Image (cartoon, rainbow, N blue to C red; front, side, top):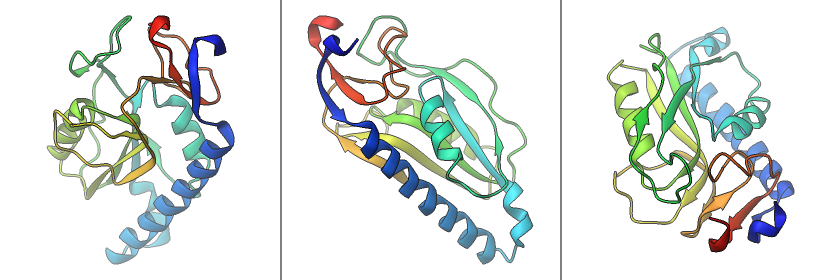
Length: 189
């Protein structure tokens, strides 16, 4: 698999350190949000992570272990890069969104923010359910012109416009198991 990479963009040590920092920031923000509402420390069960599957699974697992509070998960499956393509084909919801998020603090988790279509769609559907707050957390923020205007509240790394794989990101279902994030060679696509 490594021979298919042009280069390692972000190594596993940098990823681990940044995910730890993100977990600390999210935990601080959630505690402050709950305290601002006058909620007790036990109210942390009002925090719901909504990971976009499948790409965010590794990031989600590592990030969750950095959040020392009660929380729940509401998984959502979205397809935007079907098959062997490096171009988004538009976001399509493949599963139901969590339906019990009214008044809760929602954090949408995704591997990468690029066109904005996936996160824009999921966030708009979540906002229809009147959560107390809705934040977006991504591991990678690709520096491109977005098709949909959306910002990440938490972003691990800004990256250039390149097709990346590893740490959950794939090409045609492969490379998710690479522990680093690398730029895929054009001839590998």
